[in-house]
Length: 129
Image (cartoon, rainbow, N blue to C red; front, side, top):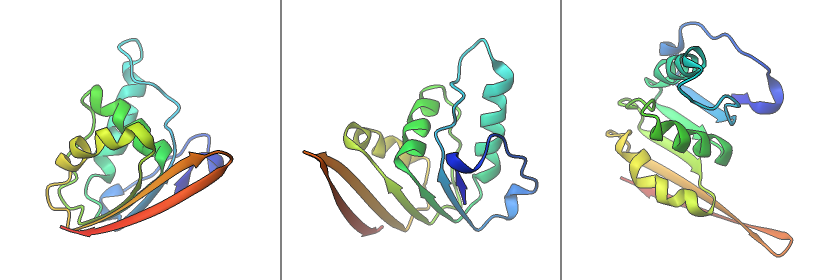
């Protein structure tokens, strides 16, 4: 389980043995052509978790994935069979592109949170694929 409020930096070894990963980070580093080393760090991390079978990701992480997919650094999650993800508003447009990165997905839980007046509406949909 990895959250933005818990870390400034992280070193993880042997990512390929992960079974479940829970990400609640926005990856504060934006990918640009001026900082190749930071882009490579993000790419290496994503490649490292690409063998996970179950992933839980927050809206912040989905937003970061959308940004990084435009830069072409989102890997295929070939072993991912279960995904629980929060998609805020316009990020639902990114869902089909993200699902293309998960060719063996069997279970999808989508959590959509809307801000209505000053209350949050939370809906959850489960799909068996």
